[in-house]
Length: 274
Image 1 (cartoon, rainbow, N blue to C red):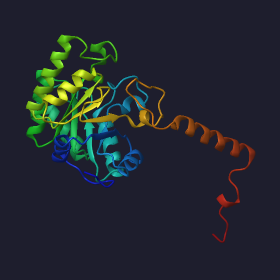
Image 2: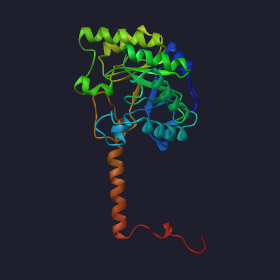
Image 3: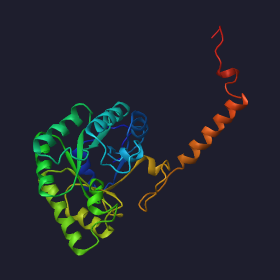
Image 4: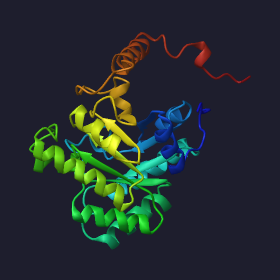
């Protein structure tokens, strides 16, 4: 199917895309300007990721991101992308402390932030309970397995997961479990391609890869990474622009014009007849 920019999609449409073999494109956004920029393209859905903690707020991990941060940034993206399907990350500890807390926080992201769905990490028993609880109050849930950034201390860093036979089997079992719990989509991050392919073939729900190989049902990249507006470049990132250099040059040209007196020129100045 060929979609016009800003066409509203939904969970049923994503399932249909998987069934028809059409790849799904997801991009992160963190404010109104980014949302507007992404919504003007043929991109399928937007993720307001807690990665904003690192790429926008300057933290060294996602663990410091709060519910207030996520609601604020999700609402900003929604204002820029009023028709887009938006998934909002549930930050660390927003779904770890019981099902009632998880439901309340998910509802806040929908009601105050304007999200269409929420995403949470992990496939343990408590995570499955959180997925079921949130789905039970009619909020779609995207699951996230593999390299889950909120588990950075447990993993001892941002390391590829699922490399051993035991880890491979555990993630495969968790993938089937999150689907059974009611997740409508699954993000797979930092796993071997073989595992990404196996999970994608085994599940009815669409899988979205980030460092999970070529055979997932779609892909997601961070806005700043794909545009070269970040100093980090993991192996799984393909840069489609070099905004860091472009922006730097533009600012330097502005500074030089100010210091030389070339800016503002006559055309930038107001006169009584204006």
